[in-house]
Image (cartoon, rainbow, N blue to C red; front, side, top):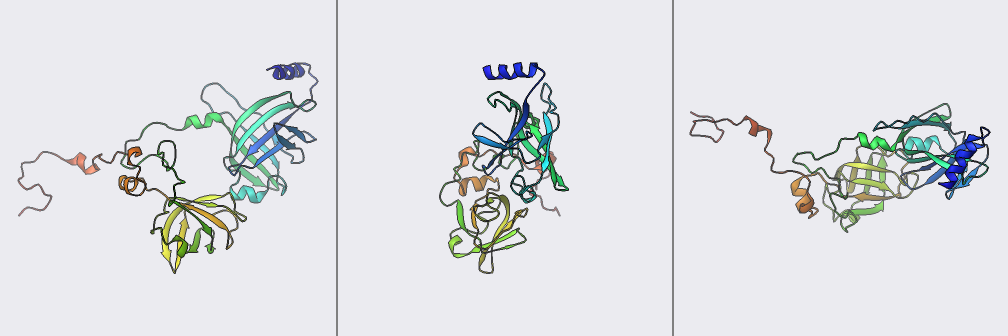
Amino acid sequence: MALQAELEAHLATGLTTVARAWAITRSDGLRMGFTDHDRDLSFAGLSFRADTGLTALALQQSTGLSVDNTEAMGALSDTAISEADIAAGRFDGAEVLAWLVNWVDVSQRQVLFRGTIGEIRRAGGAFQAELRGLSEALNRPVGRIYQKPCTAVLGDAICRFDVETPGYAFEGALVAAFENRVLRFSLQPLSGFEAGWFQRGRVRMLSGAAAGLSATIKRDTFEAGTRRIDLWEPIREYLAMGDLVRIESGCDKRFETCRLKFNNLMNFQGFPDIPEDDWLMVHPTQAKAQGGGSRR
């Protein structure tokens, strides 16, 4: 609080030495620092680079549950934020923390914004990123949904299933990839997993150019002596034979799957006994035969 008071006193002088700084933490754990000052700054265990041309628009803040938002703009660079990394989705949903900092004494700083990266547009060697505040999450509907399938996400705090349990994941080398959407693996290491075991699961790239990226599995089958994994969307980075891949089993949200595949019935979040839609059309009748067949 004392350092914040010193910054406020500095701002009150009217002759200031302040700059903005941003820390970006990607989903793969990589942290990057940027500043609009003309020299690099260092604080909070991170170096903030000044050679990126990164600037920010005015931050829109309001009371209540309205979303605080702003935008950041900068130049694309192989050593900072590259077009290839943006196209691969490495910055999608990345965490952002922004400060107003006195570059003469970096201990005098104040957090201006905390949130995530939304839509990113790029053109002409530059990018423009939408920054969404923490209140963005409050705009999502919450509450229970009464439906037959389970509403939990496999492995989350409600499901409680340990996804690291042996037999529910496989790590191995990629044999071939077609359009980054169809992946093939040697059949022998996966012989213990029945077809469809990984359907609705996830593929996580552990090595190669696509390391750190992931995708959802659409289909899991045997084909031509290999294990074929089809993805809903292609991996947005180059895949090569021999890349190490982790395949995680999926859940189709059915009552039987929770009981037989995961032995996790106590945490099932669906309502399997809800009547079908046809039940709503049932009406009283005096007919003796009520089996649904035609009468003669």
